Amino acid sequence: MARYDILIVNGPNLRFIGQRDTSVYGTRKIDDIPEILKEMNNELLSRISLEFFQANGEGEIIDRLEKAWHDKIDGMVINPGAYTHTSLALADCLGWIGVPFVEVHLSNVWSREKIRRQSLTAAHGIGVVAGFGIMSYIYGLQALVDYLDTSNNNLGG
Ligand code: DQA
Image 1 (cartoon, rainbow, N blue to C red):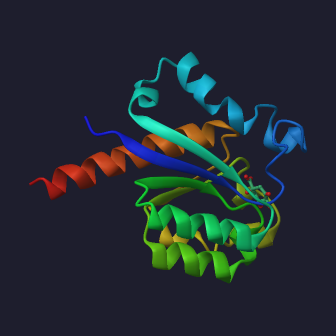
Image 2 (image 1 turned 45 degrees about the vertical axis):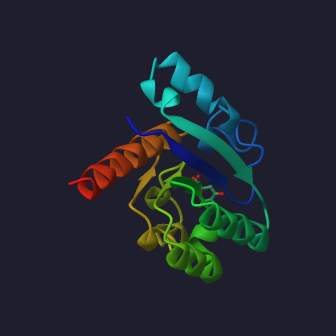
C-alpha cells in the first residue's frame, strides 16, 4: 500500500478551533486529528505522514501552498476559512499548483449566511466535506487517500 505525505492547511481564525465559537465549530482541536484516528482504530494513520499548517494571512498560505507544490507533496486537506468565499488569489494558487486537495469546513456553510454558500476555492479540488465539525477533516483525509489510491492504481494500469 502506498504511503502519502499530506498537508493539512487551515486559514484565518482557525488557530483556536476548540475554543472559538464552540457552538458552531465544536470543542475538538485540529491537533486532535491523529488522536481521533487512533481512537477510531483507523488504519489511515499508518499510511500517511501528516503535516499541519495554519496562517491568518493570504500571502503566507499561498507561500506554503507553493512550497507544497515544490516539495511534490501527495495531497492536501484544506480549510481556507473565510478566504473560501473571498480569495481569488488563493483560488488561483490552488488552480495552478494542481496538488490534489479536499476542501473541508467544520460548519455546514450552506446553512449559514448567503455569502458562505459560495466557494471560490472548491472548484479546484476533488470535493468538499462540510458540516461535521472536526470529523470533516477525518472524512476529507479518507476521501483524499481513496482518491490517491485510485489515481495510483489507474496510473499503474
Ligand atoms: C469555516 C466556514 C467559513 O465560512 C468561516 O469563515 C470559517 C470557518 C468552517 O470551517 O466552517 O472561518 O471555514
